[in-house]
Length: 298
Ligand code: 3HC
Image (tube, rainbow, N blue to C red; front, side, top):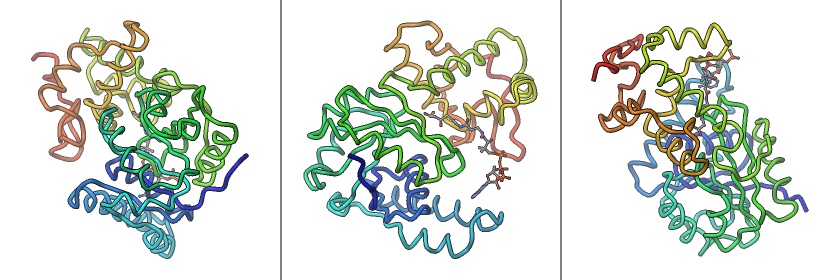
C-alpha cells in the first residue's frame, strides 16, 4: 500500500545531499540533514543558502519561499534527530563500509516503518538493502547534479522491494517536482549505463587526437543539442567520481566500453578532479575557464 511521505531525512550534506535536502524542504517536507562534522554541515547548509539566494536574485525563487524552505530545514550531527522521518535518503561517500555504518547508526533509532533510499550511482542496491534490517523497504533514489535544476530521478527497486514501496517513492519524487523513471538494480541504472561509455569515449577521442577539448565539447553541444559538452560535464560531476563509477561498472559488466582510459586515471592521481579542485579538463582559476590542452602531453 502506498504511504504518504511527510518528514524527510538526508544522510550527508555534500554536493548531492545538500541538493536533495534543499529540494525536499523547498517542496514542503520538514527535512533534517545529517553530517558527521560541524564544518561539513556548515559548508552544506551554506551551499543551500547560496543556491536559494541565487534563485531569488534570478527571480526564480520568491523571497518568502526561500525563507520558508530554510524554516523547514534543519541540520544535525545526531542520528536521533532523524527518528521520526518517514523516508531517509542516504547521500554519503560512495563506499559500502561507510554506508553500512551510517545505516546501522540510523536504524538503531529510526521508526521501523520508515523507508530507506540510497542516492548511490554505482553501488549494488540489493547488497545495500541486505545490509539493513529492512531490505523490503529499501530502494535506490538517484538524483542528478545539480539536484535543484535537474528534473530526473531514477527510482530503483530490487527483488526484495515490498509492494507499495516503489509507488510511495515515485509519488514522493513527484512531490519534489521531479519526473521519476523506474529502473531495476543493474549498476548504472538507465542514465549512467548510457552516459558513462559516452564520456569515456570522449576521453579516448581526445587521447587519439581526434579533436581538442574545446572542439569536442563544442561538437557535442552544437551537433547534438546537449546542454554541455562531455569535458565540461566531467568537470562538473568530478573526474574522480566518474572514474570510481566507471570502475564499478567495468567490474560488473566486464565490457571494455566501461573501462576508464589511462588519461583519466592519471588525472585522478594528479588531483585534477574537475571544477571542485579548480582544475580538470579546464582550468578554473580565471573566468572563463580555459581548456587544459597540455593534458595529453603528460
Ligand atoms: N535557483 C533556481 N533556479 C536557478 C538557479 C537557482 N539558484 N540557478 C539557475 N537557475 C535556473 C536558471 O534561471 C535557468 O532557468 P530557465 O531555463 O527557466 O531560464 C535554469 O536554471 C538553467 O540555469 P542557467 O541558465 O544558469 O544555466 P544553464 O542553462 O547553463 O544550465 C544546467 C545549467 C542545468 C546545469 C545545464 O547545463 C545542464 O543541464 N547540464 C547538464 C548536467 C547534467 O548532465 N547532469 C547530470 C550529470 S550525471 C549525474 O549527476 C549522475 C551521477 O551519478 C554522476
